[in-house]
Image 1 (cartoon, rainbow, N blue to C red):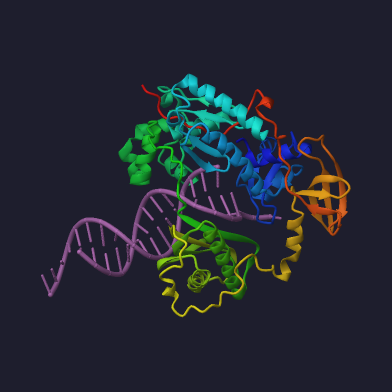
Image 2 (image 1 turned 135 degrees about the horizontal axis):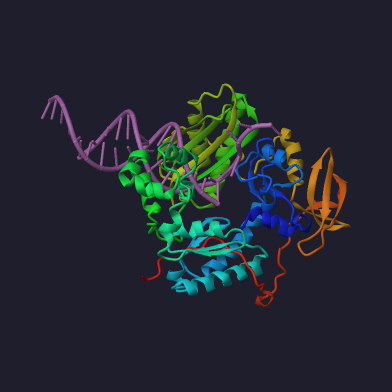
Length: 456
DNA sequence: TCTGGGGTCCTAAAGCAA
DNA sequence: TCTGTTGCTTTAGGACCC
């Protein structure tokens, strides 16, 4: 999907169409999750600190992500993909590989193009959003093709043309080459994919190690036979929080770790999982990050056990100077939900579990944050008189709401008191009227789509 | 107002067992 | 019994991806 989060917001908010929209964390330490193409013109891009984005595009609309809504839309798209083939491998909410050959949906360039075009139309009809399709003989190439196809396009890489196409491209095009590897290669005089080929496999292994070196060399030759894998099991579950200001108080750090442990356990149990290895993550005031882990004798999903392990791990960490982020994770996952056989690993474990189930009441000091969350920028609201709208901004005891819906004209803005009883949070409205196939548009969008090698 | 959150995979060192 | 090799597990960190 093209600029997925931002596109969803533009589709639900007519007044934002054609405008610069930035979705991401709005706190003092937020980063950009997605920028609309209009915002990218100003140089705003994913992972950029929000403050920098605001300097570059001060007049853009800044919105908090609505993951639940994006997930629901993503589900609809994934359904369309699964109708094409049982082999669908989601990479994220807005991207997936599809093995069209395995599904019998396509067997050559011609049939693949047809499927891709129809898919784009279907996605447009079902979600109202556009996206892009990349068609090629491997996952790597399909991914590159889909990048080229964005926004709102379809690109086919024809078998036999791969090497010539890749040759002049930057090494950074290859999946797995990020800033560090890119720099490493550049210092060795390698900036293009053909230079990887010229350097040879041995040199790549010498530079990057066996696994990475061999992998990249193969990619540079357009050799990639990784299969599309439908169900990949989770290998870890974790939660983490970055705090608006560094935490110095050691007691508070301990409390936060307990809260994170509880949240982690809730997620773990929600997925019906247990795990053996508990991981504590600490990012300090200077952004240095360290992890400490402990492996139990058997998997657990017990809040007391995981809390205690996290607390023990924290004991071994120096937090003087302040802490910017804390995280708790569990890996070494096992599938059973049973009461674990080894809970006594924490021998003297008391039932000091406290209020775990369901979010305990937020501490008083979080009340302002709570009010802001209730009126988070971009979230939907309903007013008893003016109807459905969304929060444009809030502060100083006021909320500004724009009253419009996906199908309406751009709407009017009104301001209310934060405590106005006529105003309440609302669920997002569907982006497309739930019609049947007849309302299918001529254009559409989709995620990255892969196709296995056609027979030679 | 410098740098989110949720993951995956790889490497290397150290301890231990065969 | 001593020494060396190999391999597995645990731990810590880093790179990368969306």
